Image (cartoon, rainbow, N blue to C red; front, side):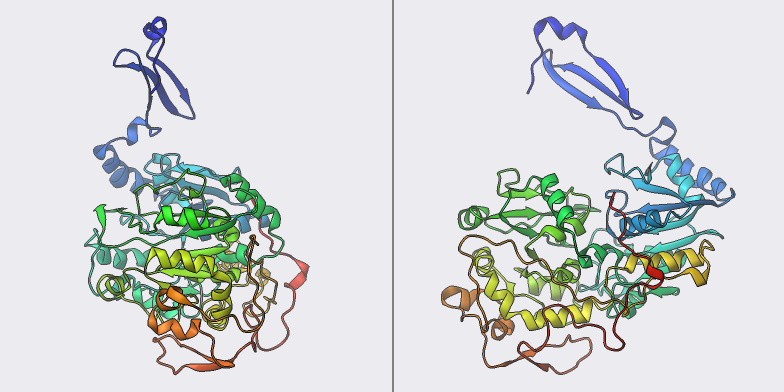
Length: 538
C-alpha cells in the first residue's frame, strides 16, 4: 500500500489517456494511492444492449460490404499470440503475401508483433473484421452467431491431438456449457478446412465434430519450431525473457483442466497436487519448475515467484516453452503429442486416472499401455521420477519411438507451409502450380535432438540401464507399465493403442534410432526450387 504525502492529496484525482485507454490516479480513503484503469472499449460497444446492437445490426450490415484482402487470426479466444495461427501468420509474413494481418485480442491482453494489427474482441472493428475478412483462422470455437459468407475461407486449426474424447464422442457432458454439442453442430458448417495434426486424428476429428468439409493433413504448424535445428539462440532468448537461471534443468508441469471442477462457464479450478516443499528440497539445487495453467483455468499458481517455481501461464506460446523444457510433466493434455517431437522425456502425473477416463471424458486408445513415459500417482514418486529421469528415458526409448511414429507422422517442420498453400489456393491468392511446400514424407526428419541440460552428478548409463530399486520400483508407475520400466531381455513388448485392436509387436532393443524412423521410400530431398521455410520470428 502506498500513502500520499499530506500536501499532495488535494492534487488528486489525476487523469491521463494512453492507447485509447483512460487511467485515473486517485486518493482513496484520504491518503491511499490507487490506480483506476478504465476499459479501452469505445462507448458504443459497452454493455449488453450495445453489444446486441453490434451483433444484430452492425455485423449483418458489414456482411453486405465487399470482402477485403485481410486475414483474421484468433488464438484461444483472443488471449494469446500463439499456436498454429501464429505459425501460419509467420509463414505468410515470410512469403510477403499481400494481406492485412489482423489479430484478435481480448482487452489488450495480447502483445501482437508489428506484422499484425490488434483487433479488440467485442469492439466494432472486431465485428467488421469477422464480417469482411477474406480469411478467418482460429484454433478454438468461433462465436455461435458467426456465419461464413461467400468469398470467405474459414480455417479451423483446433489445438491438439485428441486423447480424451471430444465433441459428439463425449458420452456425457460434465462441463458448464450444457448446450456445447448444439453449438458445435452449428459452427462446423462454417468451416472450410479442419487441420489434422496426424493420421490418427483425421477420422476422429471429422467424426467428433461432424465436419462435412475437407481435412487438411498438414501436421500441426505449431510444432514446426520443435522440428527445426539451430534453435539455440531462440532458446536462450526464451529463458532470458522468463528469467530462468543458467545451468539448471527445466521441468515444466502443464496439466489439462477438469470438466467437473469449475466456478462458472469458462472458469475452471486448478487441481494442484505437487508437494512444492518436497520438490524444492529435492530438486531446487539444480532444477526449476515452470507451471502452465490451461487457458480455461483461473486459479493462481502456488509458490510462483520464489526462485524455484515460475508461473508461465501468461507466456504467449506453448511451443516456445516446450523448446526449452528438459522434462515435461502433464496428464491427459494433448501437449504430449507435440512434446515428443523434441525427443526429451515426459512424465504423466495421473492421480485421478480412473475418474477422468471412466467418468469425465473417456480415451480414444489405451493410454496406460501406450504412453511414452511412466504414469505416476503421488507427488513423492513424481519427484523421485524426475531425479531418475535418465534411466526412465532409457527404459522408455522403444515406446517413445513408437509413439513418435504413430502420432508425429506428419510433423516435419513444414506444416505451416502446407497449410498456407492449401488455404491460399482455395482463396484464389495462389495458383495451384505455385503451391510448392514439401509434401509429407519428402523431408528428411533425422536430426540430433537437444539433450537435457546436464546437471552435477548426472548419471549416464550405457547399454542396459540399472534396475529400479526400493520404493521407486514399487510405486513409480501403474502396474501395466512396470515391465516397461524394468529392463529384461533383449526385446520388449510395445503396446499398440486400443483403437486398432492390434496385438503388441516386438521391437529388438536398440534396433530403431532414437528419433522417428525416416520416411520409407525414396530418400527425402530438400524442398523444391531451393526455397527454404524457416519461418519468421517476430
